[in-house]
Length: 102
Picture 1 (cartoon, one colour):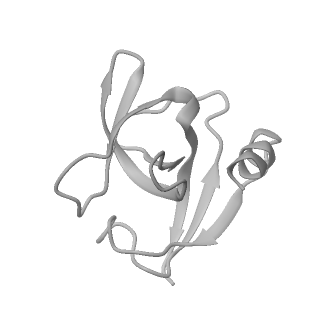
Picture 2 (cartoon, rainbow, N blue to C red; picture 1 turned 90 degrees about the vertical axis):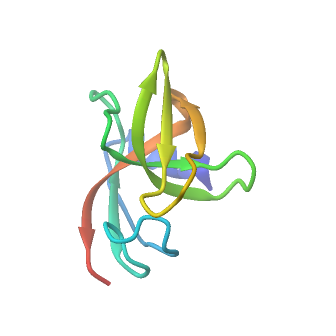
């Protein structure tokens, strides 16, 4: 699934889906419609809400970039106590460019 999503995004298409969960509350609510676009010619930045595949669960996750350390990015859900860890640039599939209330 992640490979297909990455391929569609790299072709310049956006992807929309309904968010599930509360880790990004209040920025993103359960059921909100999120639109993703690839980081094609734009580097990820602190504050971006990025989509990535969680290594442990292999699930798509959408959390905020809170810090850049050398060539890695630390991400964390707004409602989470601890960060998810460090991700490489290649781990970041896309960024959220639009949020519509669900």
